[in-house]
Image (cartoon, one colour):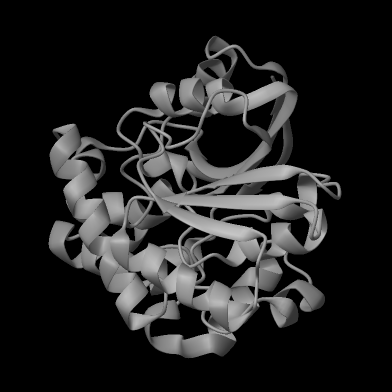
Length: 274
């Protein structure tokens, strides 16, 4: 698939998510299950009750596959960049950790998400958070301008992951930290999944092999690259997620094939230093 086409489809898919206020990617039944299901999935991937309670209503769309904020060891006064900030959930959690002297910048390529995030920031009276429209392959930030980069299940959607990591390295200060949660593969996906646009929006088609993903981070110049956490991709997510249902229906996947795909996918949390 051409990069421009992928970005167009991903942007359109996430625009719909922003408008309907729930995920079609990262959570079980979250397109139709409402807030309770989204909250339940968020708990399972590492968010605390306090974090879920403190974020503005509508900020958590259930799009993540981990909790990078909890692992980022954020300190007061730091400047944090959230790659693919969506409706702002992780950005708002980070803002609480860095305090009034700190700053959080969320970058997202979907105008509808930026609009929703700004509305949420106003609703929650967050004055140390800003959201910028832009691509994570071409970050709208100056060199060495942030202390920490977080990202949650977003880089797998990029058709040029190497550039994302190069850009991340560029904008981090010397000694700055990268902390990301993402979807990677233990085995290659079948061609019919890798070439599926629906699977791309479902956070599957864009995923790459775990070793290759880590190698890209190291190639960008990062040091001390470590996998902090690794969990399997639940089979029930593929079985119940509306986007996954569409994939299975369109591609006529059997239950056995679905299980084989799910067994190939894991969620990992990675940290690294510039």
